[in-house]
Image (cartoon, rainbow, N blue to C red; front, side, top):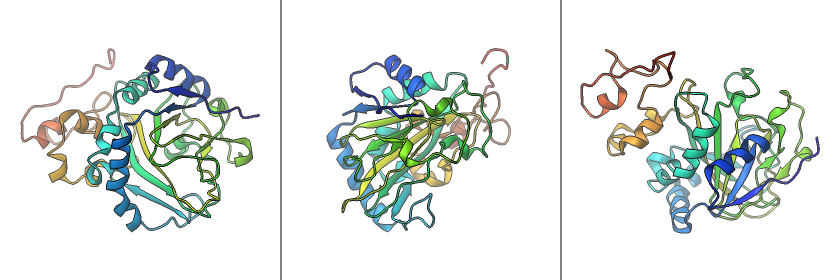
Length: 281
């Protein structure tokens, strides 16, 4: 298929319009969504962790790329990105067929000079290549630009509209277009759209914060309960903890011992969880 440019929308765009573009095109850039000072703070807090992260060991992970996780524990400022109200609103609309959703992963991706383009893929393949129905979305992803994203420095490459295509390992970077965006902008894309990191032919490192969400009945890619130490988790607000997975998902997933709600247990309370009715989620 012939790829068209990734659509851009201004930061004041409503969640309904963003959702419409996301469903149709599989990806959309929201220009200037992040407060510049907040974006700088996230980048500064993560820089020492990025520098300490080993480079990838294969073509997919990127041998000139550093993937650094545990943003909630390592970067207090990033928690505002994780809980951004517009992003959560759009995510809820996209994943509306599930009774709830949760955080899937938090990760900075630093693509260094000389990194070739990543193989084109779908993120939902992480679920053992399960063939989800074409109209059933289980994953909503974001990449926040912590530096400018240009075609030359490795901007994420997208095949807009490709969420309707059959699974294939044969798509190439030549079929894609770059999601170029300025620092502070946010790329939203579905788990179905074909994409990959671009090649970095510059002398600079391109850094993005990849924060993604998944329906409550699927396993999270990043284990939030070990990525965020208990002493840190105890300091977080209840809404963030629920988003991280300290709640039951779907009908009866994720409770502990005597059907206790995980958030109640973390807070040292004894309240039990309540299940969603299968006939009335």
